[in-house]
Amino acid sequence: MDCPVCKEAMIVLELDEVEIDHCLCCGGIWLDAGELELLLGDCDQKDNLLSSLRVDKNTKEDKRRCPICLKKMEKVLCGTDREVRIDKCRKNDGIWFDKGELEDIVSMAAFDKDNKVTDLLEDMFGRKT
Image (spheres, rainbow, N blue to C red):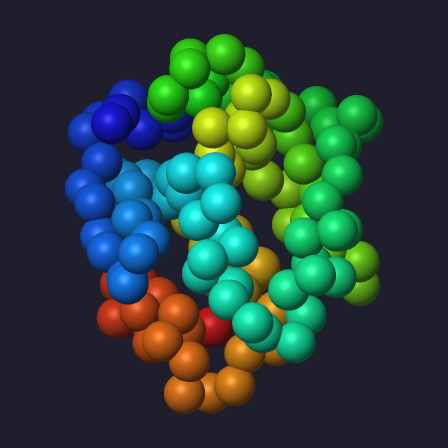
């Protein structure tokens, strides 16, 4: 799969049943539909976080194309206290996270310190979430 930002081929990283498509050039991450929910698992804030997703109609950012269906994605805000703008496929093929955005969202999910997701992201990106 090619990166929707820099058009380079992405690598696939696996964590249990979740495949994370990662661009080594720009640091972005693609998650197929349902994979964010799998990553978040049973964390305390999962339902609140997922229900906070809403279309950002006021953004001036250029819309990117979904790497699966190639249609323009919508800009979506995630979070209540702190907002992160991500790209979501209108056909629900998946979600694109620019570098650092997935870590920001995972940090909002209130995982405990010994969580496999936070450990993976730290291993992948060399920083704590």
